[in-house]
Image (cartoon, rainbow, N blue to C red; front, side):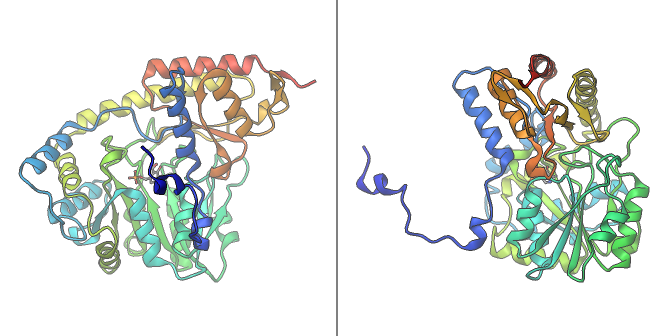
Length: 414
Ligand SMILES: Cc1ncc(COP(=O)(O)O)c(C=O)c1O
């Protein structure tokens, strides 16, 4: 039975702060929700919007979490995270030639919260953060919420959706404070080489910028591409870099919400202080789960998963190469996305609707072919759609043939 109070709760007399009105809900999450609600209604939608592999959480993590519960390891932990996990994260990161210790690491609720803390401790009002486009949807909002100004840095056409020092230099102002890097990148899947990152990092040193390096997809690198951790480039670079990472993507643990910052000790202390007054600490149970994942030898299992995703990536690339109207501006050697340019379908129509934008393409693909992809506008790439190849191989193959049939059925607008 509805109470009178419940009936009135769709109305509000509360005035929201400006900052709240500036933050739209995540477009990716909205699309994912739409696709899931269609699926719940019984529609056979194949959802290629998600940002997580379809694998189960690695087993040692699940086991460690169960033990944490049965042992009643269920209290607040130290604000920066349990010492064993901080040490394990440092060891884990150092396989990429960094020199972190436990004191450099703060564990938080996912890489997203780690980014939020990084910007909170770095930015004065109006400080500018250079964000290479196309970018992960949350970056500009995380910067704005911390009082900073997100500044998009667009790659030159024909440069494989990668920025170079030239574009960074052109975007610099006296207010530039942070250069954000994200390799492997969401949504483009590009992986910056050691030399490309060195050149960008050299600029940060020259102009005294802090680098925030989001390395959440460090495991997902294919073919002859190699992951480089920015803080491993040189001691000069390490002391101005905050490395962001977590267990979400590598260990299929997105729901456990464990990520981290690794940074010079003074910065780590500031981040831990912020966390102590906000989240207090991440979940004790999830921390134990992450510890289980990081301290078990999972190399063989993770390599198998990577090979599987690589197969799905190749299938997706081959299919897109064969679909007229779709093209690639970049070589996606990492993460789990192919970022397809759909501008070749502009001006074509289906059932009286003409495609003029990637958003039109995505909407019609969902309504007519039951395949959900994310249009690129919120990634600052309005002619692209992001295709996640994380779904099981048979569903991926079916989705790709649906996309092929959908585009083949498009006809020139009258
Ligand atoms: C580039 C990038 N950074 C950070 C995150 C957030 O990771 P987490 O789930 O650990 O908060 C995501 C998740 O989609 C991402 O794609």
